[in-house]
Length: 329
Ligand code: GAL
Image (cartoon, rainbow, N blue to C red):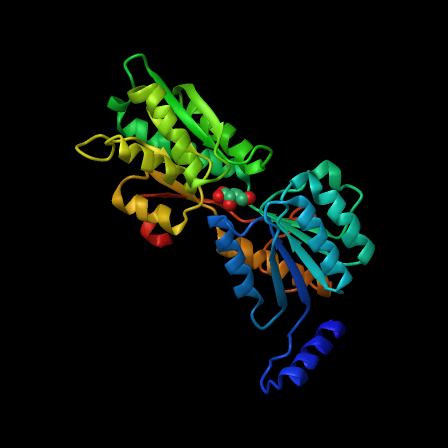
């Protein structure tokens, strides 16, 4: 902190600046696994907003490389930052990061990519802010349960619903649990499912479009629905479907995503995306920043979220369909 203040003062002297506002509150170093990710951009903006007037947050892009992120953590520690908030590139790297922050005596708040609990038992001063991935899986499954219940004519005569699934990054808790719980929800509701194709598109819209184009070529109208672990991939699938004449002249394909990003809400409005699940970037970002500040100060009075099992803050998901999407715009 002192180092930072003297650097700012030096800048004022060198550049002759007359009005530089000195940092208020603690210095927080924030790593985002990569800036080029639609949902994480929302979280990043929420962190910056929450920091206004209460902390000096420096947010860096780990460029999807764990080695780069490790160097960034070391840099924050060496520069005397008061706390760090880390969106790990690889969630199995959290123990290594906690070794560094505990040695430096500063707290770390992980967010969006959940540390593996068994790897964290040696550490105390860490937290996780995220959402229960299984909840989002169940909700996206429920959107399809509601659709097929209201449209029994969309179920093939043999009673088997054939789906394709676009998954997020392998190893990510959201990819794994959304994939499992969405199908489980449909099966628990009494539907019979068959997977035509399941593959990763790494949360990415272009990869989603490419995979869907290939699946349409391979399976054509055997596909009854598309499940995507996030909205970007769902929107990529919708582009591929549009190119095959879907969403015109009564030709429809139920596609569900997760996140409720602005372009997904647009797609809901135009009637191409069947539904999505709000992954609450605003609250996840705010909780991350406020929790890091509280942990730095060792004072959690007034922290507006519940801390579960000493480490976890869970931000709830919400189902978003044509009935309620305007509440989220
Ligand atoms: C998920 C989100 C994805 C992607 C990922 C990054 O929660 O649904 O769109 O942003 O996090 O870790």
